[in-house]
Image (cartoon, rainbow, N blue to C red; front, side):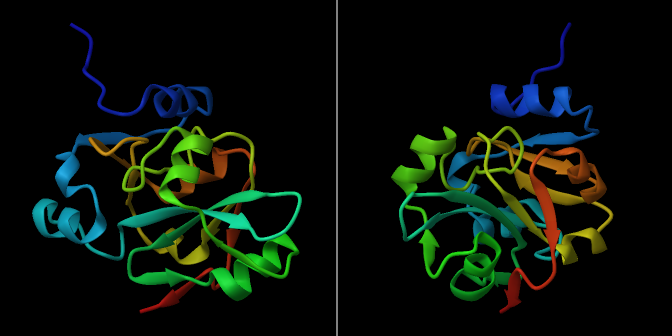
Length: 164
């Protein structure tokens, strides 16, 4: 019998295309947001990462995905704007995120996205394993952060996140 996959189909296809090694877990959708997930599933805040879609506040509209440890907040005003070469950007709305990626907030992952820059805070490499969204709110992806090097358009960046 085939294994059941909880991950979003596009995410699973991208993982396979990139030959990434991963584990997955099923997640109660009501516990997909970081604080509830950490409390219920017992992962550490250092190894649990948030993938956040940002949007340029200029024309043409451009998007990027930023991945930071849940112990940090995203430096969207300075660092992300600098990386995109623009004056201002902001967090994409839940509606923009869903329309662009097909993923709901709480399940966004940098794997299987449409073509866009992907910036990952360098500190995620300090973990043996990290937890990311599974492309939906009912799964989480667990992998060695070195596997992210296989993702197209992904760049590790110093000081993307600001410690809380």
